Length: 342
Image (cartoon, rainbow, N blue to C red; front, side, top):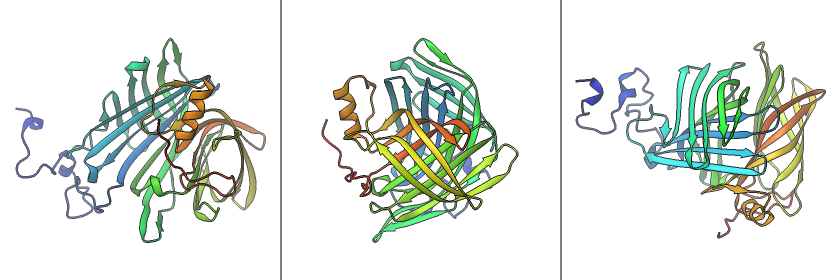
């Protein structure tokens, strides 16, 4: 009888990972140190066509205190948007990184991941191996309270890579893709994060990963990041300024100029929107060529993962800039987010 068929006696919180010498507290791994309902252990991948034809983001999050695993796949191709979301109950099985038709697996720690992704309703399928093109960058720990309320206390790292394999969207297949992956764990109460901007940009010889959190009035909560090179060199980013141009009547940027302080130098990174993945629950497929539908989704979204062409000096690249304005922004006259009825 295979060992996987033996029931676990006594406690459903004992799982396969408890067999390894990896415990950090006296609790089983299914029981995390915090009882905060927004404690989460998450992974994220963006998947980008360097020619501007297609972009996707896919991820999985374990919420041990909510006993839930949640996965998602968002795709944009031209004016067409697709979304697949799935949740499953979480037992002592966080090593099963999957939900529905989304599966993620570590092939070689800190080097390679396997992604098997499908949205059958929208005829989307992907079989990809992410291979790192440079070492990971570990961001400084972040902890922030809004009054007495804990909003975030987490660790976070990113890593840029290339994908082997392909993504099929309907009748078209994309290969030669690039992307940046993200790993984070700890408390992150997104509904109470005022403003954040995350830059994940890829250039031929280097990558930029930078993150700024601020209050609605523009005061810095947290900023960090780095320019990382395929040679292994790392130049920390110590300050991030921004000047956004919004679509008329919208909180969605169409372009941005970022002033980065890195290695004692002032650098200008410019990002121009190719298309935006709209972040809203529950996301569904839509076509933004319908102005009324686009306006509705724009208003309902709490944020955007924006597929962009980027430049840094005379270097041109591709990337994602993630914008969230949940708390509103006085500088850009963006009100605090209040979900509208459908």
